[in-house]
Image (tube, rainbow, N blue to C red; front, side, top):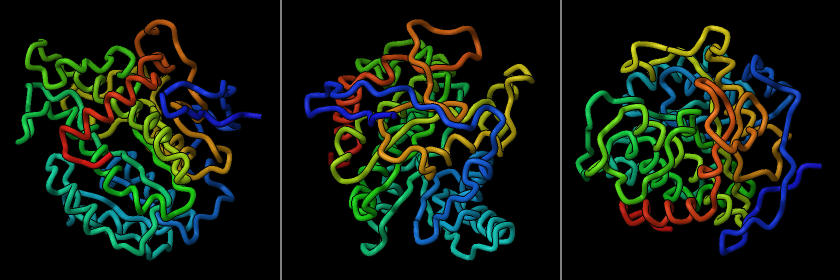
Length: 326
């Protein structure tokens, strides 16, 4: 039997969990993963849900009966997406709320406006930007990929803690990437004030941070019934590659959007992950922990992305940068 990945207050691992595998794999789709799963009465929030994997994740959760909130910057596009999801699934409970992850005041406004009576059972931190060609900073002075992909989601997650705790068994999905494998978090230069800016490395660093978010959220909040895991959805042709000249992954390693959303919904809602937190999944299985960087386009997870000391330090650092409570 797989044991839960838990950590004590000092960050030390208290169990040695077996690697979790499932009957699903590289080619599985979101609908296949959720076949027979009934999410009626549960509420989910998906960020970046107007395109790509985000839209498919929201659709699959709605098809399983969940009440789905699309957290989006463009509410007109969100309304169109919600209408298409309702038409495809017959689920009328698909709502749109404005959320601009490049704007911390927008994140705060979103969490403060979350209705007190609404528990949140599933939070999918899906939205992201990738490989901005020039070093770009937010109004607060933070490198934009790190700010949007990680800092904003960290603030969002903390801001929704009460709603997650109210669910009595909430799950958080933190979207990462195999790009993390070449990019540990450099705590002494998060905003590229000293390092040369390399677009894909800055992206990878933000994706390492997203794994660490799942590790620390699980350590802090498991007693509240909240568990978090990180996922690599795979290589899917979406708007994410607009600055990279399109998808560079070999054809045999590419996924459709429906396949790409499979690992996200597995972590979000499958009973196979009951009681599991603080881990990293790819191709619907827990990833192998590596001892060195794999060949290009390889899988697995780097130890520095699961390190509890890194996770604790990053959480505290992010809280001080955004003003979010711990």
